[in-house]
Image 1 (cartoon, chains in turn cyan, brown):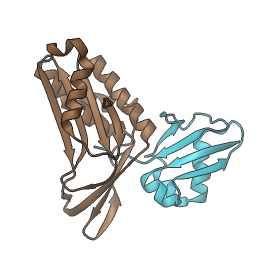
Image 2 (image 1 turned 90 degrees about the horizontal axis):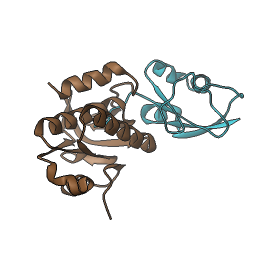
Image 3 (image 1 turned 135 degrees about the vertical axis):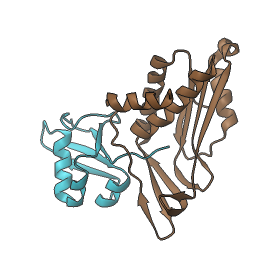
Length: 81
Length: 164
């Protein structure tokens, strides 16, 4: 199944794209999507413990399963204000 | 056209219409307000020894708005009867420009100040917004807190600072 991946700030710079489409196995979690990205872009690995994750524009944990057509977002530590 | 209470976008921040939006949101109860607190966050020309020339802000806008709504719910729970407006800007901002405006209205000044301070602390904790700092000699993404809206300790710290 296909999911859309959104990347922001330095994660976007590392991956070279703000939005990607990826095929993942049925039942895959947000964490599995992340691991697939890290395999493509090893420099992302340093963010393993500091990212936040969102599913369809709402915060969600790494263990949350994704579904066909979902938008998964990976967020580096924030710096608004 | 009415200005929304919660907003994120590239438009320049002007305080007075935001204050008017808060007052309008009170409707017939506006006469009960005894205080409005306003906060503006500005782009500063120095940071950690670097001479900053400008900033670029980006956001995951739909989640940022949901984060603002969460902050409003937290304020409703902690400071009943306080009205909130929160506007955050994205895009390129020059030195001295406002990146964020917070307006709170309340019957008494203590709650207005506290809710205003709480809001900026929570923005820095949970809003999916990032600033890229351009300075003399380079640029870098600024990375602060790992956003976790369910982190009770972070929320308690924001409340502690707000009520200090």
